[in-house]
Amino acid sequence: MTTTVLPRVNYLNVKHTVASWLLTKDHKRIGIMYLIVVSLAFLIGGIFAALIRVELTTPLGDLVSDDTYNKLFTMHGVAMVFFVLIPAVPAILGNFALPLMIGAKDVAFPKINLLSWYIFVIGFLFTIAAGILGGVDTGWTFYTPYSSVYSNSNVLLTGIGIFIAGFSSILTGLNFMVTIHRMRAPGMTWFRLPLFIWALYATSLVQILGTPVIAITVLMLAVERALGFGFFDPRLGGDPVLFQHLFWFYSHPAVYIMILPPMGAISEVIACFSRKSIFGYSFVAFSSLAIAVFGFLVWAHHLFVSGISPYSAMVFSFLSFAVAIPSAIKTFNWTATMYRGAIWWQAPMMWVFGFMGLFLIGGLTGLFLAALGLDVHLHDTYFVVAHFHYIMVGGAIMGYFAGLHYWWPKMTGKMYSNSAATLAALLVFVGFNLTFFPQFIVGYLGMPRRYHAYADEFQVLNVLSSAGASIMGVGYTLIACYLLYSFFKGKDAGPNPWRAVGLEWETQSPPIPENFTEQPIVTAAPYGYETRESNVG
Image (tube, rainbow, N blue to C red):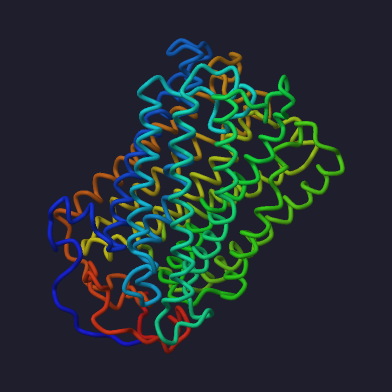
C-alpha cells in the first residue's frame, strides 16, 4: 500500500459554519452528525430505562401508574432499537470508515448519503413528538389488535417516525453496497477487503431486503387504525398473527443489522491489538453473509406460543439452532486469533473482551428460547428481556464502543485517556452483568415482563438489577466525559496511534476532505501483522 505525505488540513477545520455541516456531502462529517443524533437518542432511551429500574426497585407500582409504565418501556424500546441499535455502527462508523478502508474519496452517492441523515432526523423528530405529546403504550413491537384498535396513545405518530426512518436505512444500505462494488482502490479484491467491510455488505443486504417489509407492516397498521381496514382486527376478518409474522420477518433479521457491524468492528480491533491476521479470514467473511441469509429463516421462533403448527415450530426451532453456527465460527476464530498473540492491553481491546463475554452468554441463552418446550415456559418472562439485552447491549453496544474507541483518534485526531476508557469498560461490564443476569433467574422463576408490580419474592433480584443499572449509567457517563474532553483538549493522535494496518491509517488524522492526496494501491492481503514491522508488544 502506498503512503504519502499529506498537508495539515482536515474535514473538521474547514468552514466551521453550521450551514457547511448541514449541507455537507463529506461522508466523515455525515458520520459525526449521525453520532450526535444517535447519542441524543441513547440519552433519551437511557433516561427511560433509569425510570423503569427505579420503579422496579419495589414490588408495588408506587412511582408511576401502570399506563405511564407502559409508555416508559415502549418509548425506551423504540428509541433504543430504531434510533440507536440499528443505526449506531453502520451509520456512524460505517459512514466514517468504509470509504477510507477501501481507498475511496467518498461513498457512491454523497447527496443520497446526506439525504439519509435528514430522513433519519425527521423520523426521530416524529418519534420525539409522540413522546412529548403523551407517548405510546403498545410495546416497541406494536402487537395488534391492541395497537390498531384499543390503544389511545400516539401509535400513528410513532409509526410515522419509524416508517420514515426506515427509508434512511434502505438508502444507506444501497449506498454502501454500490460503494463496495464500484469504488474499491486498485488491487482491493474481495478477499483483500477488511472484515468490517464484509460485515457492512451483509448488513446492507438485510437493510435493503428486510426494511421494506416493516415499512409496509407499519403502513398497514396505520391504515387499519385510521381507516378501519381489517388487516389484523379479527372482528373485521383480519388476523393478528399475520402482523406478528410480518413484524418478525423484518425484526429478527434486524437483530443482525444491529449485531453484524459490531462483529466486523470486533474483527478489526482483535487483529490490531493481537498483532495477528484474523484466523480463518474467509470463514469469518462468509459467516457474515451466512448470518444475513439465515436471519431471514428464523422469524417464527417468536411465534411458538401464537398458534402456529407444531411442524412449523419444529422447523423454525431447528433453523434457530442452525443460525448460531456462523456466530460460533466468528467467536472461535477470534479466540484462535488472540491465541499466542502479542495482546496490547489498550482500551479498544477491553471493550472486545467485554463484548465476547456478554455476547457468549446472550448467544447460549438464545438456544434456550429456540427449544420448543423451554420457550413455552420462558416466553414473555424476564428471561427474554435478559437474553435480548445480552445480545443487543452486551453485544451490539459493546462492539460499537470497541469500534468507536478504535477509530476515535482517526475521526478527531485526538487521543482520549486510556485509563479512563478502561475503567469505563469495566464499569459497563460489571454493571451490565449485575443488571441483567438476575433477570435470567427471575424470568425462569416466572416473573413476567412489562409489569410495573411483581411478587415480593422477586424484590432482592430486582434491587440488584437496579443497582447494576446505576453502575452501568456511571460507565456511560464517563465515556461521554472523556471523549468530549479529548475532542477539545486531547493530545494529538498522529496518523496511526495504534500502528495498525489498513488504508484508513495511511492518511492523516483527521483525514483531509478528499481522504487521500493520491489514489492508494493495495498490494497485500488484509491485516498481515506478522509480516510487517508493526509489533508493539
